[in-house]
Structure formats: structure tokens, C-alpha cells
Image 1 (spheres, rainbow, N blue to C red):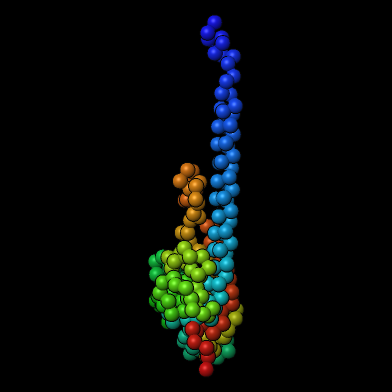
Image 2 (cartoon, helix red, strand yellow):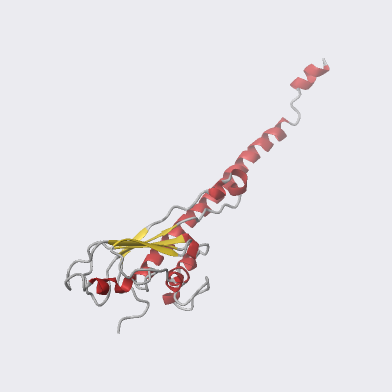
Length: 214
């Protein structure tokens, strides 16, 4: 008889329902907060890559010797001939540049040039720029470091052998090994291992020099 009364007893039922619903609502709220923060990181990374490509287009190349490639090729080619194909990929995580195709004279990794792209001109760490001309990728997205950046220089038909301004490559800047950060879900579900996509941006190279031509 006592068990039957206990089974029909509804005292405290509302408290149980509120506890369940509150848990569900709380999970939804923190999920929305983390989703919006992840969306912010996505947008910031996209803008940072765009800025990085623009800086790379008007800065010394990370690949040492790339500026002189068209001049080096002029003895083998007639001045004005199309530049042969090359593709140089510079990886900040390994501080190396790997070249395929015609790579005469292209060798080495320019640390200062990569720092210019990531941290802004003249900087070796992420600091507040004192001029818009000294902005770097990290000023747009402060978690970006050199190890997160890959820059590729590819010959796509522009420029010519013997050009005094060097080759005119297509420059591609992309990200790597940069996970999203979450306030709540990362520690609960392992979302902190989800990486931000490469966010690749491509732009045509210009003078490939950190100094304006005289």
C-alpha cells in the first residue's frame, strides 16, 4: 500500500522537470555562444589571410633568390621570352622553401620576410602597429604565428625573362595547424581539435620588394 502511494506521489515533479529543461536550455545557450565565437574566428582568419597575401605581394619574397630568377634565366633565354614554370612553397612551421620546376638561384628561407607578413614590417613578434603600413596578419587574428602560415609563389604566365623587376608570380597565402577555440564545448566534446580551414587567398605579385622602387 505504501509503495502504491509513493508511485502516485507527484510532489517535487515540477522541480524535476525544471531541472531537466534548465539543463537543456543551458546547453543550447553555451552552444550558441561557442558557435558565434567560432564564426568570429572564421571571419578573422579569412581577413588575416587576405591581408597577408596583400603584404606578400609588395614585400621581399620568403623564398631567397626569387627576385633574381628572371635575371638569372636571361642567359638561357632570350630577353623578353616567357618565364618558365616554377612553384615555390614556403612553410613557416618548418622554415623551409621547396621549389619545383625552374628554380635556378632559388634557395633558402627568409625569416625576416615571413615575419613581415605575419607580424608586420620590421617586427618579429605580434605588437600593436604604430602605422597602418606596419599591420600584420596577427593584428587581424592574434593567434596566428609564423608556424601557421604557408606562402606559395607560382609562375602563371606573367613576367618575362630578363625583367629588371623580377618575376611576377601568383602568390597564395594559407593557414595550417590553427584550431578553433571554444569557451565551453571544447573541454566537453573535444571540439578544440577542430582546425580552422586553410582560408586560402591568391593575389598577383607586384614588385616583390619591401622598399618602394626608386
